[in-house]
Image (tube, rainbow, N blue to C red; front, side):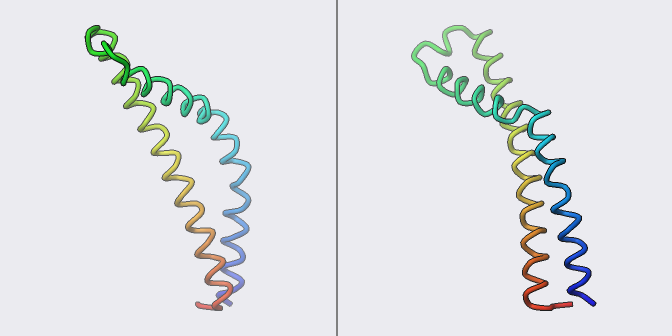
Length: 95
């Protein structure tokens, strides 16, 4: 019985794959990573802190991007963990 439940949950999780792909695109995750990298490089340039207004804007944007990427990564990690747990449960036939 438990194996059937694990299979059912696993199928539901795998069906969410396309949803996550669409979310990845809608949230523009790759663009956010690129912008984050660019802004981190800018923040390490000499004289960055000389323009206080600009540096504050950059730091605010950095934090926004870091939070966005962290939340998406956490969501994907949870999804992967749940999928792996279903697979482990199926293999062990553990109720």
